[in-house]
Image (cartoon, rainbow, N blue to C red):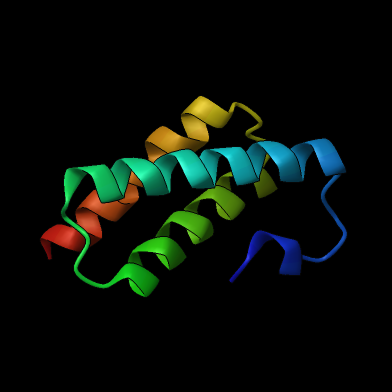
Length: 77
């Protein structure tokens, strides 16, 4: 899922911070070198960020941190 494919329920500034969090989290995952399945990893990041934003989280640093944590849990399984 790409953020621009989301329904128009998010304001432009919310989409922008979600996109920023996603790109920062993705760069961090790639830097770590732990990504085996890039599509699955990016999907997990996106899903986590969208879920958190949908309940009102608007801090891009928190979105990034929680998305990375969720991805870490998946990569270890």
